[in-house]
Length: 330
Image (spheres, rainbow, N blue to C red):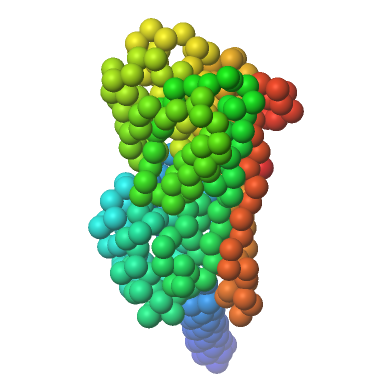
């Protein structure tokens, strides 16, 4: 009898252990199922943003992208960035792919400000608002918001400095006519010096805002006009390319007045050393932060300003001591 009672106890003990194991596994399964379902539902509610730049071969655009990415990821959302490397066709394809992936807002830095209508029409039909950054587009009616610096005034600032610090000049222009920002900067410069006959534009070349293209472009202009003594470059990488070309032909830094736009740390240092004349500084940090702010306003059902235009600051040797020369303007 005692033996049989022990057997019963063992059987009940074994059954109780099995039941406990089953309950444990069942509980774990329910937790995993709930957790996975919760994670899926969390992912479903994450906002997806797309960003396409004309190029990321420029720290200016890298900083804009990082500002947007930081804000988006801090909100638990997703940013997908693309670099078409100055190709309109590739940029259009990348926009199509982003729209197909289900993005809710598109940040656009256009390769060619006059050729974006097909891509913008696609976004408009997909009900995906577009926020244009840094350079305007021709099809403004298809854009929810544009966030730029006052690029025309940047050119005006450079020209005003020139005409008040020199009696005259033979000017070379480094341009990027596919970018409205570049067009506006050069136009602001040209409209201002037009009032001063002693300042004459003797040559110009396209360089797409790239140092690698600006240097040989400047060399070609110097071969045609070796008496060039002023360079107006649409941006700082182009200005640095011009400086490299001048050094290659033996022109001493400082002999030629060189103007750029951006306020890159490298050009600030060149101004401090006397190798460059001035740069009209803008803030890629602020452009990025304001662009993403407009995006979240759109998602919240608000109507942001259609145009956000930021001032530029002319940096010269006279005020270089007042700015941070190792970083970008904030």
